[in-house]
Amino acid sequence: MRPARRTDPLWLLGPSLLFLFVFVVYPLGHALRLSLYDWDLLTPERYVGLENYRALFESGDFCTILQSTLSVSLTAVAFSMLIGLALALAVNRPGRLAAFARTSIFSAYVVSWVSVALLWLWLLDADAGLVSAFGRALGFERAGLLASPHTAPFAIAGVVVWKIAGYSMVLFLSGLQSIPTSVLEAAALDGAGAWQRLRRVVLPLLGPTSAFVGTTSLILTFQAFDVVRIMTQGGPVRSTTVFVYSIYEQMFVGLRVGRASAEALVFFAVLLVLTGLELVFHQRRQAL
Image 1 (tube, rainbow, N blue to C red):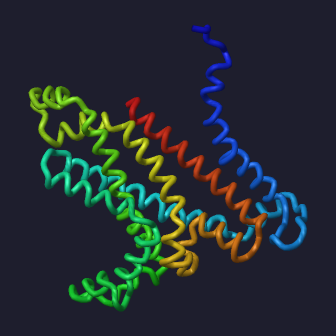
Image 2: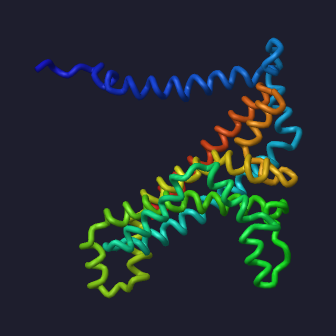
Image 3: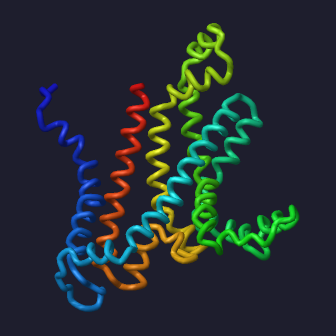
């Protein structure tokens, strides 16, 4: 058996590093280069320096897009985690009924975004949708949730919650089942009730799971393109124009490759900052 060499870890990391370079580092570097040019895919590239970034911030588009993205994303992450945790606590038990409930809830996550968007576009239709019909039956006026800039972002967020709540449930369920039963039994013997066990034992032990669910859910919601493209096309009044949809408009509608690349890099930076803040928050919460 030959002795270990210092280069052995590099050989083991080689495939992952190659994948990271080809699909992450190189595209980011190429986008950075394109963001310094004015190019419409038809004429030769023209170097403009930081003009694309200046136009993004001075036009006011950045604030509008950031507000729309955060309205949809943070709302969806918060409610999907709360609902996912509640569902995990409800179905964390043996039996066929619980197994059927787990399968049924998670099935929404494996359905394509296009199918989900078409389903909810019909359900939220102001004239023929079931949600509007239910509201009229209760005495409310015609509900056009997708037609108002005040409600459209939260309607989109609700659709995203319906889609990814099963994902959060499965991860929280895995975290719950990894908690030793002896810990819960010891807390019960010490006189802790169900609520106290949940608050003082279960939730702290679910800290790493919560951090993972929150981070991955944030990334998922930031990439919600199909549901916006099908249901609102970024409207009304650009209230649902999230980053990925704005990048699509710049690239494939306006043929502004440099502007789209600049927005993509800003989008990556915003997502990186929010992810870092979320991880720091969970780490400090665990340290308390």
